[in-house]
Length: 345
Ligand SMILES: Nc1ncnc2c1ncn2[C@@H]1O[C@H](COP(=O)(O)OP(=O)(O)OP(=O)(O)O)[C@@H](O)[C@H]1O
Ligand code: SF4
Ligand SMILES: [Mg+2]
Image (cartoon, rainbow, N blue to C red; front, top):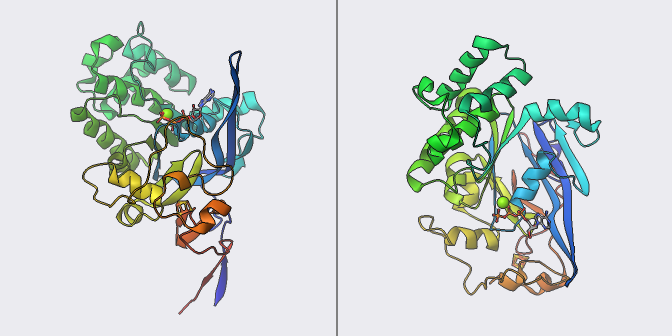
C-alpha cells in the first residue's frame, strides 16, 4: 500500500498544470449616495485547474461569478487574494507590465457579444494584422497571408471574400469567428470563452461550438468555457465546475457529473434545461435576485429541498466523493482530501 499525496484544494495529484487557480477571492463594494454600502462576494475560495488540450466549463446561473472569474484570469481585474499559476508560475506575483504581454499572448478571451468586441470601422484584416505583427508574424504580404490562414482555420471560406469586410457586413456567427481568429493570432495556449454562443441564433451556435471543439482536438488548445448552458458544456467540456454565488459547489468529469449530479443545485440546474432529464430537488425555492443568503450555514439552504439540520449550522466544506469529483454539501461525508490511499495489486 502506498500513500499518494493529493492537493488539498483540488483533490488532484500535485502535477504542474497549464493553468492552476487557487483560493481566488473577489468582492465588489458599491457605494451610492442613496443606498447603504453593498458588498458582493463574486468569487470565494475558487480553485481549479485546466490542463493542455482540455476544455473545462464553468457553469452557473446569472450573477454566480462566471465573468468575474474570467476577468480575473485575463488580469482585467485584480483578485483580493489567491493564486493564478500558468505552467506553475504565479502570474500575480510577476512584475505587471513585463509579464502582461507574455501572459496575454498565452491566455486569450472571446466575449459574448461579437459585435461589441469588434471595432465597427475596422476591416477584418485590420483586426487580425496588429496582433499577428505584435507576436512576430512578419510584415507586408506575409501578414495578409497569415490573416487569410486564420480565416480559413475558423471556417470563413473563401477567406479572400471576408478579409476586407467591416463587422456590419458579417453575420453574428461570422463575427464570432473573426473574434476567435483574432484570439488565435497570438497562438494562445488557453482560450477563455465567456458565453461565446449565447447571443447567436440557435442555428449557428452548433457551428461555433464545433469550431471550438476542432481547435481543441486539432491544435491542442485549452478552453475555459463560461456558460449557463449545460448542453454546451456537455458537448465541449471534459470537466465541469458548477458555480453558485461565487463558489464552486461541484466539479468533476462532464459525463459523470451530468449523469449523476451530486449537489442539489446541480440537479436543479439540470432539471431546468429540457433534454437532460434529472429530477429537480422537489420543493426547492428559487431565490429572488436581491435576497441575501443566511449569515451562517449553507448559502444554498433557502433553495434546497434536501436540507439537513447541519445545513443551517455550518457551511459545508468541499469533499472528494470520487476520483476527480468534489462536492460542497453536507449530504456527503467529510474526509481528509489531502491524502488518498491507493492499494496496489
Ligand atoms: N464591477 C462590479 N461592481 C460591482 N458588482 C459587480 C461588478 N462586477 C460584477 N459584480 C457583481 O458580482 C456578481 C457576479 O457577477 P458576474 O458578472 O461575474 O456574474 P455572471 O455569472 O457572469 O452572470 P451572467 O451569467 O449574468 O453574465 C454579481 O452579483 C454582480 O452584480
Ligand atoms: S449543504 Fe444542505 S442546504 Fe446545502 S446543498 Fe447540501 S443539503 Fe442542501
Ligand atoms: Mg457573465
